[in-house]
Image (cartoon, rainbow, N blue to C red):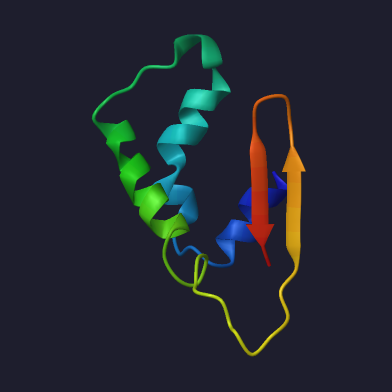
Length: 78
């Protein structure tokens, strides 16, 4: 839940945007993809645009975090 609270600071009306996802997760045995769940594109757009995702500031130092799992490698530039 901490991640959602963090995102609320940056994405206006986040609760309305992800209401369909919250409802689906309340009862995972009844997950159904409907027309309403096509709002997922709106969530993707909100996460991939400023101020969430912005280009790097080359005047500042970078921190690189990396980790790997069995079949996954991830790197985060901060």
